[in-house]
Image (cartoon, rainbow, N blue to C red; front, top):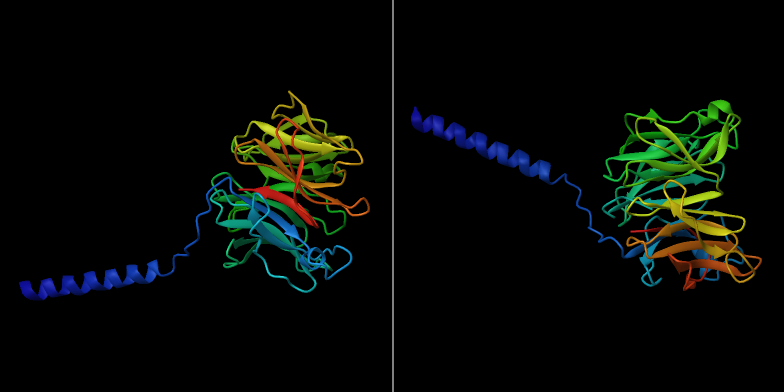
Length: 313
């Protein structure tokens, strides 16, 4: 009887071990990417390699070293599809981005590993954009419109990283308004541009409980520093930084004939010492990704070509 009981226990243990082994085989292994080393962006490869004379809307997403070397494509080059406005997961193993077709009938917010594997469309519908991860990577924030009329009247929503348990945080669209340029900061607040018929245009913040705060009048909000202490934004006169309460404004770039004046995305370096920015002024031959230090000095081109929405990890 004892030997039979022991044998039964042994069989049970082996079955449990085999079950655990099978489960462990389902774990998705992702490469760890040390922070402060890589530049993420979308680009038109055909234009940048000289196979097209004009930049196309059909961009794919790449990352490179901070000096512009080692360009590596993440999303495929898909005929009649675009991938753009990408940002990193906190651990650097994934990105979240917007993908769609020309007619915007198959658009959505997607995630993918930096290896190009494990593609998922987490928020379906072409009425969504501006996706970003939470500081812990377990949630996402994004803009979403409830009405299928362009230009879309977006509000901010949050959800689990897989798109479940969606929650609406803002209500600008109810007053003919919209939000854009969303960034979830390490301080727990989501910073963004917004305005409506009943609220001022400018930069706002909101937390995951829906507590809204107006920060300052400004142009295009670009991002928040990795330490959650500084904002980056641009307007018709240049690019600026400030504290997250809108104080201590610094001019980083003044637009003129020699500096970018068609800014399309910018991002702080991880240590806060540099800002990387994209310029898309084709007519003035001012194309590429540039960098400048946090005091506005040392302006320098990093990549020459058509690039959008740089993001640093």
